[in-house]
Length: 247
Image 1: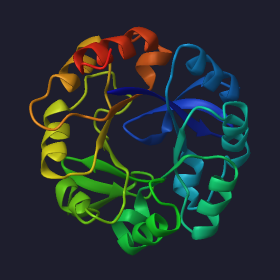
Image 2: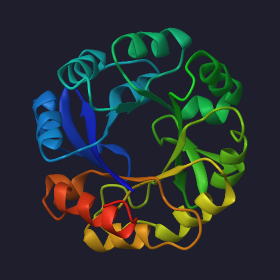
Image 3: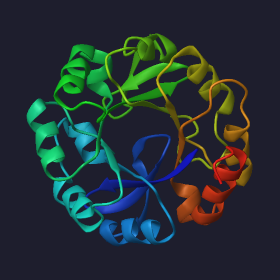
């Protein structure tokens, strides 16, 4: 299982939100490129970027920073969500060196857009499903839908989606533990690899994800826990490798 550091971008800074609220953020650095470098030095095998401003604006707002990170660390796969709403946005990021496009709001509202992207960029598209009480939220988590996570995810079977990022909004940034049970249910309901997100707090959360019965979890996105040092990235990846039999 991959341990994937999160770099959330707001007003050009690296921040973490609590439960997806833009007015409840903590600034951890004014230099996101340096933050990316720190995670790479500690052994990150993939980076997770979120353009928070872009998610709410509906178009890229921190593209220059994303491009700088991709340019600085070309050998590290970078995945980005937030504000990718057109084929032009997607093409621009791919041309800039981004490895994976994460589609959230449009995956729910216009699932055919995901299919179109998968045709244009094979194996480069990830669907981000953010849930409140089991139902998918959109527009930067500001709007709730009537679709369950499993129902929405099942739409993307066999269209070429490389992974599903599943975030429990109620846990995100709260340091209260990952929702392993809901993550496991989703992973067992679909054939697409699942990346857990939201609430990963300590090494016990890594253990719980690695030890789930059924379909293995592909990765775990970790944010505030890394910044507040309740999880050490290098140690967590070694632990995940060992538990997954990949050491």
